[in-house]
Length: 219
Ligand code: AP5
Ligand code: MG
Image (cartoon, rainbow, N blue to C red):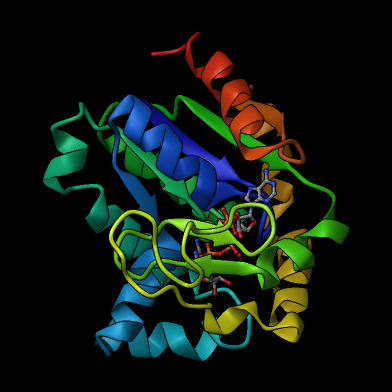
């Protein structure tokens, strides 16, 4: 199964990706998480990505595509029959074209692009109240999905943190960039008849139910 998760910042991509990957046993590849890990370890890739991410800008296409192409050669992808869930990639029409080329080299096609639809005006509230576990990447919300103990991950007891790019001005910039650069991908995948829209405004467990209904029809 080869899935792309589309949606604006705060749509619930990371939240749903975790559930989908656990249920269907495919690797969760989040380009944002990979960049954050590289920033934490101060690698050359992390240093380059930081310049863009801190301003809410997209990391240049060439860097992202090279990184994803390499990631798709890892054992967890190969051992699941070239299976993956991409969260936050592609994000530009260039990246979407590059993904088609990468898949074609493997004689494979994308199974589906799942587009989480959430009105833009509620995204800021979602993102600014988000807290994340740095260890297992579980995502919480201070109102809608609280940890059992304040500030602590339910699964591994690690202290939760807030992302640097979740400040209100940076989130606004990210939403604007989503509209300019990423929304055209909806049409890109509509033209290929590969897209399914899901109402991301429902409770997160209902969003997942809808996704499961769709995925039960594909393999
Ligand atoms: P990335 O990490 O991908 O961030 P994003 O796309 O902006 O999306 P978010 O992670 O903010 O939101 P999400 O949809 O995952 O929502 P979540 O599930 O956490 O990218 C960050 C940066 O990296 C980019 O700005 C760019 O600089 C760079 N980058 C990454 N990929 C790139 C690429 N391909 N090209 C170039 N640059 C790239 O949920 C949000 C909150 O809402 C949480 O608190 C959650 O608990 C809550 N929530 C979730 N679902 C619901 C629900 N149904 N109801 C109520 N609350 C909910
Ligand atoms: Mg995310």
